Amino acid sequence: MLGSTGYRARMNILLTGAAGFIGFHAAKHLLAEGHTVVGVDNLNDYYSTDLKLARLEQLTPFPNFTFIALDISEKGAIDTALSRTPITHILHLAAQAGVRYSLENPHSYIQSNVVGHLNVLEYARHSKTVEHVAYASSSSVYGEREAEVGFKETDRVREPASLYAATKLSGEMLSESYARLYDIRQTGLRFFTVYGPWGRPDMAYWIFTEKILAGEPITLFAPDLMKRDFTYVDDIVGVLPSLLAKTPPRHIIYNLGNSAPNTLHELVEAVETACGQKAEATILPQQPGDVRSTFADISAAKREFGFAPKTELQTGISEFVGWYREWLERQNT
Image: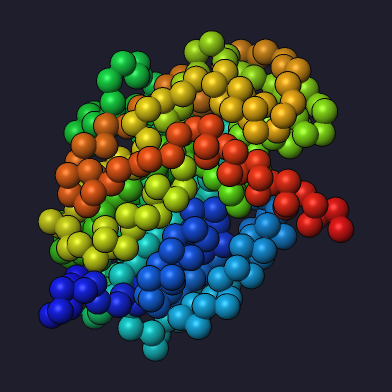
C-alpha cells in the first residue's frame, strides 16, 4: 500500500502475540516505521510472564502502540475489544508454541492455534477495513524429509510429525478456505527456527546458554542427525512492513528461513564460543515429534519482497548471549 508520493502509507495493524518473541520484535520494527500497532496477547504461563511483560515495557514508550490483554481463542473477544478501531492489516503471530509440549498438552494447541486462528479470520471476514492478513505458520508443516535441497512452498505437506505441526497446517487450510469463500487477502509465513535476543526459554540455544554459563551439562538429542535452518529474528521482521503493505493474490505462502542449515553440533559450538566456555554434553536419542532437518528455499520471498537474510549463526548467537547476560543480571538484582 503506497501513498501518492510513493512512500508507504501508514497502516493500522492488529498484531496478535505482541508479548511473544517474534511478535515483540515485529511490533518494535513496525512502530519505529511509524505504523500504528494494536497488540494483543493472553500472557499465558507457558514460559515466564516476567519476560513477556519486560518485552511489553520496551513497546509502551511508543505513542502509536496500544496493548490489550485478551485471549483470541475466546469467541468474540477480538470483535469486542476492537469494535471502535479501524484495523487495516493483521499480523497474526499468536500461537501455542513448542513441538514437545504438544505431546503433553494437546488441547491448548487446538484451542490457541486452530480456534484462535479461526477467530482472527472471522474478525477479518466481518471487518469493513481489513485489507490483508499475514499469519505465522511453521517449517514443521514439511514433516520428516531429507534436507539435500531447500523445502519449497509447493512441496506436498500432508504428513506432520507433531500435533504442533498439524495445528499450523490446519491454520493454512482454514486460511485457504476463507480466502476462497470471502476473498480475504492472506499471506502465510512459514518460519524456520527463529532465534535472537528476547527469545524463548524453551528453545535449544537459550537452554544451552543458560546451562553452559551455569556450569551445568547440556542434553543433545541425536546431534549427529539434527540440522536446522536457524534464522535471526531481525532478518525476519525487517521485511514485514513491505510484506504487509503488499496486496497478495488471495492467499499465498512463503518460506522465511536462512536457507543455510547448521548442525546441532555447530549450534553448540557457536554458544560455547559466545559464552567462552566448553559444554559437557549428554547424548540421547531423537525425541518424538522432532524432525531431523529443515532447509528453506526462499527464492519466492526474495523475488516478491526482497527477503535476503544476512546474519550468520555465530553472529546471531553472540547477540543473543550478550543480551542473555544482561537479562540474567537484571533477574538477579
